[in-house]
Image (cartoon, one colour):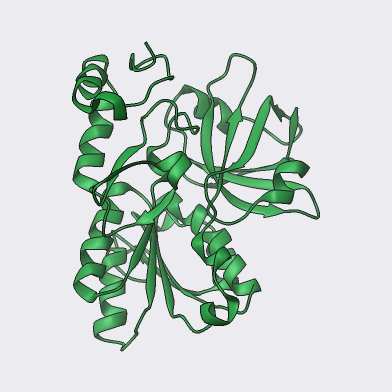
Length: 295
């Protein structure tokens, strides 16, 4: 059992849990995720790691309830436990593998949308601890949905924006990025975008125009988290990839976002899963018990 040490509501329908998981915390790196399960019969839920402390043996997760299992998770309090807490899974951010002297020369900008702020934070924190302070643009629909502002400010040059103009400025994250580059003279060697797929798509369209290489995290489309169910199947360039085992980070300029979004909608229905199985053949994957690809 994995005890929850701290439970907090960060914003409207956004929750944080700090979990006691020493073996997981010891091996965490930015960009990775965990799979949690409430009880013996509970759903396996992949969640990006928001923070970790190897010394204290804790891992922090942030999530937005979208189904029955995550709604139950939101109600858990300090002292409650998860049945399973597996990880870290997925490949770490490429920054953690770069030569530190070369990394310090780079100008890096992050663009986070909504709950995408959570997986951006550990990357900014890791960079800051290694002598790199990046720019970070955080966008939300309204002021009440801004999360981790204090934490992000401590490890980055933070720019906040809201769709409705209720806090700091009005506009999308892409508006801020364009302003920084075209009006404020900022130059970036790389951009990292994490958030809803539609947001990442438009960030990539802009960065392609601005000639800024871009990394995206495709964790929002994971279901099983082990590469078996096939829900997170992507086309990256000319190759089939699976976000949970090949990523979750990919070259954003090579990801086919339109196909990924269309596929996610189809995957939600029995009819859609059957069509995808027929269309994708051997590359469809199986094992989830729902799509029929394991039979």
